[in-house]
Structure formats: structure tokens, C-alpha cells
Image 1: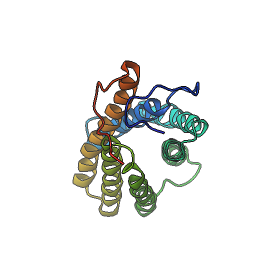
Image 2 (image 1 turned 90 degrees about the vertical axis):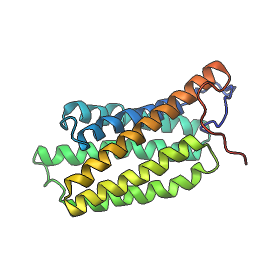
Image 3 (image 1 turned 90 degrees about the horizontal axis):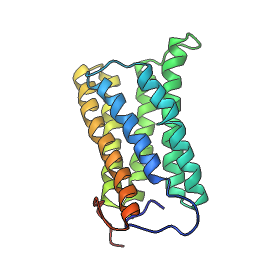
Image 4 (image 1 turned 180 degrees about the vertical axis):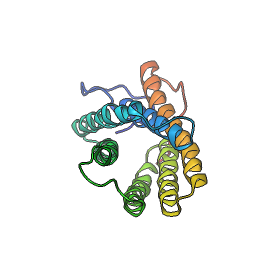
Length: 196
């Protein structure tokens, strides 16, 4: 389980949450720097989407399964494959394998991911405040991205980029907080423990 307080692990399996959260967060920040108009969408972002946002999160999800954490398995594996599918959507169109998805298709794609994220948000209510923020802000990000494709509004797309940067930074913070809190055996960076 993604820990809510510093925990020493005795099962011999490392905590995969910092890896998964940092992989998600760093890749999300980079993509949304492009969405906000600060940088171009390039091979740098696509490579991060495949190898860190994608594969590293899938690996984290598999490790969560070994730790018997269904939420971590579902979240990390799903978002890892989200990154792989997003890169696939971009590259298959560029390579001429298939037509690039039209805006209405992207509205459906982003909308279903937004719904999925909103539903997972309810699982975070038993975990910690930092994860609640990550999932709430990610839900908003998917809604804004879908709205940007639905309307064709550059303003909404740029707003989504700014919001996505905040979402990604919150995931990085949560991942690093989990890591440092575990390493030091005390709360170095607070994540807002939820009282059951």
C-alpha cells in the first residue's frame, strides 16, 4: 500500500510508490510544459512517455501487486499504459500507420481517463492528502484537456498545461516525500495522514 506514515518494510520488497509517482509526475510536468506553450512536443517528451512515465510505472504497478496493493497495482499499471498508449496515438499518426485521432476521438480518450481518475480519487480518501491532491488535480487536468480538444481553444489547452504542471509537481512531491520519510524513518515531508 502507498504508505500514509513512514513504514519499515519487512516483506523484503521495496516500496514502489516513489518510483511510480516520480515517473508519473516528471513525465506529466514535461508534457504539460508543451501544453502550456513553453516548449515543443518533441522526442524528449515521447521518450519519457515510453521509458519513464510508461514502463517505470508498469514496473511499479507489478511490484505493488507483489505487495498485495490492489490500488497501487491498478493506478500505476493503468497510468503506465496510459503513457504508452498516448505515445502510440501520437506516433502511429505521424508514421502514417493509421490516421491521427481527430479532436472528437481525443475528447473520448481523455474523457474516459478523466472518469477513471475521478473514480480512483475515492480510493485516495483512505490514503493521504497528498495523493488526494494528485488524483483530484489529475481529474481536472483530463477535463481541461478534453475541453481543449472539444472547443479547439488554445486558451483552455494552455490552462490545462499550467494545471498539469501543478499536478505533476504534486506527484513528484508525494513520491519524494514517501521516499525520504521511509529513508529517515520519520516525517521529513508531510503528506497529510488520513485518520481512519
